[in-house]
Image (cartoon, rainbow, N blue to C red; front, side, top):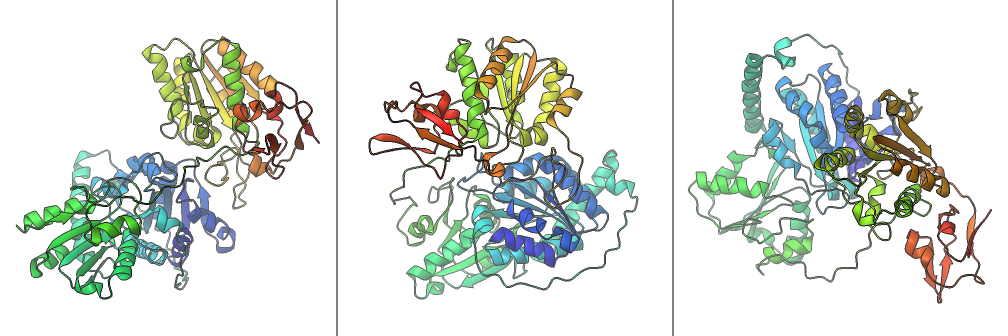
Length: 599
């Protein structure tokens, strides 16, 4: 897959420090390298968040060592502050920031287009279109980063990260590193405004040099065909366009000229201006996912050249502004059939459920049960969610959380609701890894101000949704490195929060009791609901059986829990033995006691 190709590129470039935070579609890069870390003597670790990951990689690059930080698109937002400053400082060793965008989106809260960060931060961005280029561009990014003493951003999208293809490998050559870090205050200290102005000037000069050198690099700017219709594209859209052209035209090059961009920022203005000036085109078709980034640059170039050409793209409605593109989306426009519309019949949506036996299901059911027993209406008590598996509680039948915004935001948003004057209880629910990532600062604020709210930490002892990576509570990393575990209780104890309880959500009645007690208290309360992720634990507690002499087919078990292990077949409730792990949660909800766990 593309991420494995990027990992191979890291090895071919002999990068020694690779850090990141788990996030689909970028996670497999580090997961692939972790299996090789000890054998190859490289440092590969998950960091507590993307900012920390970047700063570790940046520090290594200051010492002259090639380093990479990996993250998905929202993670770039988390890391932006130090990345901005790194542009002024520059680096000594090659530093590559892998940012994986998610058109669709498939697994991300927004369809963020990270290309805009290039001109905003003033760091070069290159974008591969295939697994082969993903590997090659990774090697190139390290080389260019060292040549220009600037961090380079390698921007990918889900289809490049997760597609598979044959890749021609290059040699893995070990480099001789001279590890040193020389004190250069003007370069590395941002406290002086005079120094900052000088470094800004330096940065602008380097970017101009990058554009001058790379805009004619055939790896980053290629032209195919000779036709009067100019297509400009980048990334995976290039492969889609080629597929459409090759499937519909015997000699597509006589009708179309196809330009593929690999250099996204600085934008390759010079070769495009040259092409537009020397050849008369009938129209320009811009094919890109997400925002009209390239399209706007093309329009600026045409204006500078005083060339009047129709530009077919997003701004005039020919291509959608949102969603992932497919060859079918592109085909309609390229064949001159008008605007692009999805005409295929869409399969029914199947939202991802919580796994059978998921402890988060038990936590939310216990919390909702406690609210009912304390005579609160579900619609009166805001439950603010966060990023993680537990966000699936938004779906029926739980329909628990009201809000799920960004990593670590649940506690702060709940604080804002209380500050606004919400009198009923306000509950923030946050996972263990998300608390470590960025929720801890919000919890510090809530503890310092003693906000009257309930914080529920759903601790499944792993970063589950992205592939079961370790948290700071682990005593050993996935590469076998021994660490100092940082338990959640220790963090909370240091914040002097007075009301703290730990429950096992599998002990359902006890969990309900603790939540009821928490709802009666005032001030800041924390409940840690802890049970290891059922997939990670490979836990089998027994088999839930249906006593059909008692079962009335009321379907309460299905409607209350939504557990995927239940099915309705031949006019009766059945339990799929290959899915059920015997957690027994459903036995609490059967009004006829027709369910039992058999060891």
